[in-house]
Image (tube, rainbow, N blue to C red; front, side):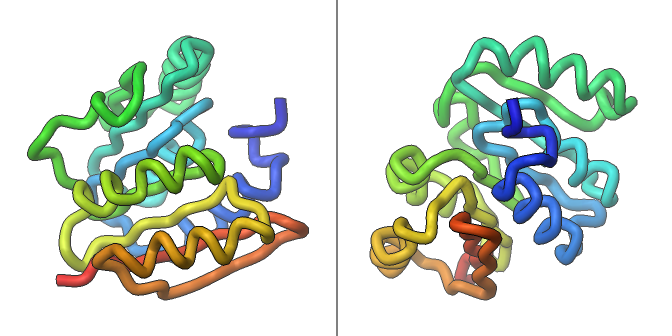
Length: 163
């Protein structure tokens, strides 16, 4: 497995971008948490609390183990399932989604809805060939593209939810 270990380009893109953000004292959503690496990194960078969720049952054991190994179990909650794992009124300052094009296109409205005004959303797991369709989907949302990064054929969008 290379996803969630830092060896895949999308994970590196997300970790680099996360390092540029001010997450100190903030609440973070890690959609498609996998190994929990992004939630763990957010906490290590000063985030107050992170919620990760994933539909893959493998994530349950792996993410829980990584949270324990990194001594962040007081700050991270890992939920198994999809977007229904986020409570109706649960809001986040920073939302991270490193999944794949089809899932991201499907859940963009949900991610925006659960990100506070002025909050940051980072999307990756996307190929260069996905850029146009993702930009089109984002144009229908209440977000502004703040940054766009690329490594090899993989891309990342950093968004800000309008106030």
